Image (cartoon, one colour):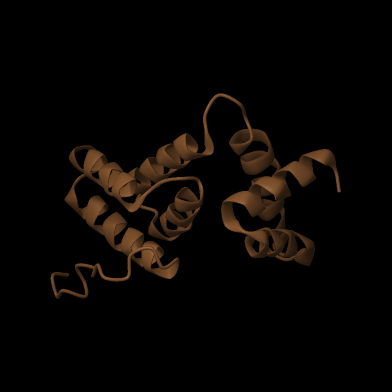
Length: 139
């Protein structure tokens, strides 16, 4: 394992746990369709970008969550909400990101992101009481 790959793995373990790091490495090793993308994510996203000095992991999570809300990417947003909590964000911080994004991305994008965020927080046991708009019969 190269130093760069070891740094990427260490950061992924810190942010997401060893299971996620194993899954990323396994996806690349499998050599099937999309395998190079897993390698790019490890080497470039984690080793080159997330590891840079200048911003904390918490700050980087704030930025990435906001970008994913704006892009309308609920599946990736769920991952990054979980990672953000590991990087020090609270549910209140994440709610404020949603509120800040709302006037810029609009209600539909914010509503989609809100549901994805609730699902992610539930999955890690942080907020098990909040219901989504779908569950309340609003969508």
